[in-house]
Image (cartoon, rainbow, N blue to C red; front, top):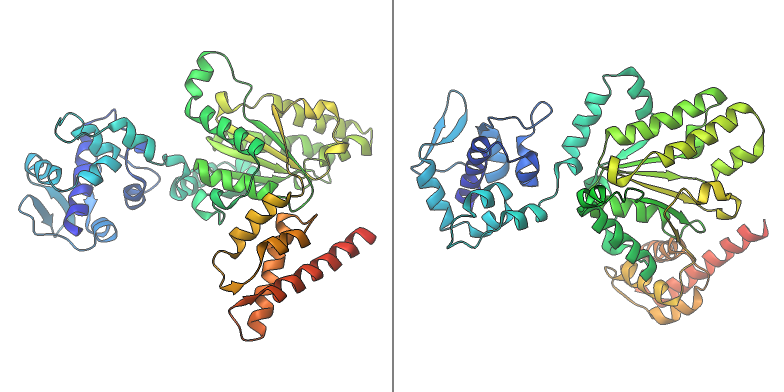
Length: 408
């Protein structure tokens, strides 16, 4: 296997260097990670000893590979022999590697598809290294450096929630499937002039999964996530608020393709009703215009806003979004699925149906707290097996906490 990966690495570099119509998105993510150097992947790619060690382990004594101890570089002495050797041994790797698939597609006996390999390969804009390099370049501008201080930027690999672990209803899933299709058909949508797509408003009580879903989507779509709380954008110097809003949307366009997630979106309504100050009006109008001017199709930015208080948003805000998705307190079926997900790795004796009946009105966050409390209580007792009693006691504790919240 070490020989296969070494030859794959060398063939990928050689073919990429030969065919200029291949792009960085054709290089497999795992190989890109070992090739990043000083900000980009530049032709000609040279394979060094350290790269071989990271990707393939130890080096090989294959007759068509040469190592130069002075430059610490590897190269193929015969591309044709190497390509033939690899074709008979590395078909699975070829089918997953767009660069190799591009070259081997014309080999009738191999049944290889470049397009299929490319679809399965995550694009470069989601790589943590690409994001860090992009941020590093942007930080050279003092003005853009100020923008970066207003947001949290996540690479997909740094997001600790998988989309499969997010429990969504059918309406929510259907809308996400629409966005997924739109992302894959951006050129077609632009061609037919359908550009007002990709502005979602998530509404619902705290703890129902709005932020978690936005983060999980970044991981699913392999996109950078720019996360900002609207209250943090506003400045004690009112005149700066409009500029801050403009900076955030400008940054999203510079980081595209990406997801721009604006939390606490109800703050726009609080701004609008709190005062008639001209600067506040200007900030609100700036925000509404920025939403109008951004597009998934034209700018490759998926805009998601979230609010716990939709009732205070006025029609001028609502109509900016092409879809409003409600995140209600989960019904029985959803609560059951949430319990199953949180408990699937935990050894124990518990009745999920009974837990579902006892947790009416609980959010996903509440259920996560139930499991957390039950696990910690069991560990305090010296157990790693959870009992139904542990979970029910935790449910009672959360109920008391919720009652205090509602009574206060």
